[in-house]
Length: 469
Image (cartoon, rainbow, N blue to C red; front, side, top):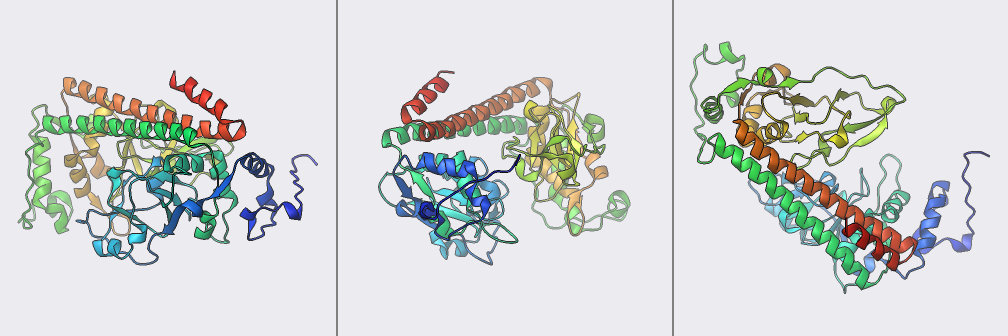
């Protein structure tokens, strides 16, 4: 029968990995069985043999905004290296009571609920940190039979990702039990080969660090230009306004709106020697709704896809009929997307050619400008002054956000063209390095797949060929 896939498996051939005796057809898809066969050419090490595996605290945790400890969740593990973008700060007592899930350098983290299968390695820049109950901490405990850099690569290959997909269980929400994670089978490749993978992963991490450095340099240069370096906003909790200066002018009665610090940030922009314009004059805003065609495939960018340094980390691909109703903004290369939601205002990104003609959530404002290049716009909207001005203008009850009118009326400094050009160069270099890091990670991933499908010699040849490019 055309389109029907059939696999025949003997009872005696059901492996240890199926210790719960799964007999649903989905578990025995042909590509899963093929991967089992390819993997069993090597000695198998089960993850729990060499690694301590646990999850984060179940139930209540306390947020403390002055704590140094980040509370990392699934969204922080989407791109091989753990990040702390948008992470809450965790009260120290919670971390003290859950040291088993307190992260260390070279721990591996694997998401086990909701978005199952995100896998990343932990590096110094995200520490101290702890995890929630939907994430497994995989901590090295024994000898170097399975190196952490090899492990994160293996789990991100099709072999690892298919295994996590295949072994999810549950009715309402699919998940991967911790005991199942401990049974994750790893093919034992030679230490010599694993060290080659380790080198590539560490190289990719160094490139990412350099990329972030370029972004921070661009940001520092912009802040110096607008006079923010020695700027200290007021911490005075009292600001007295008459009716004409307050509700009559702004239509706001909440005390938060009139904090002195916001006036200080606005004064900084107003006094910039290059001048300023309100956003609707300085920028072009794309706010027309786009209705996707039902059977056409689109890329969709949402809040969780935005990276720390203004990059788009990924997207969802689906047909128009399967798109969420908020997927109604079309973006093009060199547009800048700015989150309108308080709490995520720093989720701003530059749209690169990879995402040209993609859709994004209506939770973003989409802008570009004939007066300010896109790279400078990105850095500007992620800067402290603009973030505070955006925050001041947020309003609402259930979902606090900045509305269109308020957004269009925020002041935008007209940055000097020579400054814009330097910022553009640094951001362009930052994005180039990110692409380089992604290529290194892809090389490591494909090399591990080739080693399992063919042999290590072919995998090493692939690494050498791609290193020469």
